[in-house]
Image (cartoon, rainbow, N blue to C red; front, side):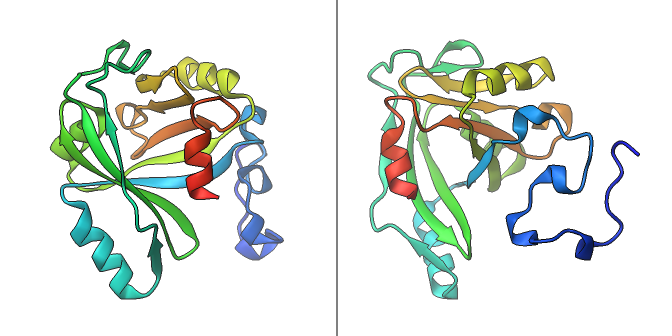
Length: 190
């Protein structure tokens, strides 16, 4: 029966290689090549959060943080289809909590989807990021499902989609690591 979930997780062989089509037969084929890249967590102050996770012994973080500054301006950077706030600035740190890659973001200024999330929901998971070899097709697919594109950049293939607007509970980031301009992040998480 379409949409039927398995009644027993034991029926899913190799659960560590889980793919949604293994348990749901109406899974859209466009997503079959999506790969989980990281969870994006937005916080008010990064250092205490990173230190907490490091103290647990289950997390590792790169010793470097990187800063995104839109005061450039950054060509093609859009926030809900409009030029991005030139005051937008954020600090990011890449790491891993258990087996899950994460990026932790601290907002330093300006309007952005991250600031919106902090104001509306507080600290927590902002997005689930997927890489896809068919980036434009995946982008168009999410738009066709009614998900507004919150932010995107033309210097690399990436975009955030507002799944919260549709009751999805978390946003989606699509990444094309093959696009020139985004390969720097691929090196950080490899």
